[in-house]
Length: 95
Image (cartoon, rainbow, N blue to C red; front, side, top):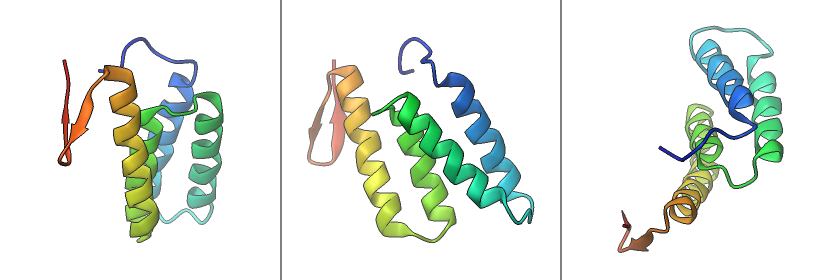
């Protein structure tokens, strides 16, 4: 969907894997591990919309809606930048 794989692809997979593990377990350090992996993924691939989307979902899970909204806005900006689309009245449109 977002073009060729990035160098953070493996890290994104690891974030997703830990995220699912966190959702379905009560491991005491799972949240810290996800935070570290999200930071690593963001550093490896700045502006990557997939990372922003995962971050938004994780912030919702943490009941941090303001931070989730900010991450979702970053996701939309990233999608727009990658596709050359425009955001019109809250709707992503493009070629």
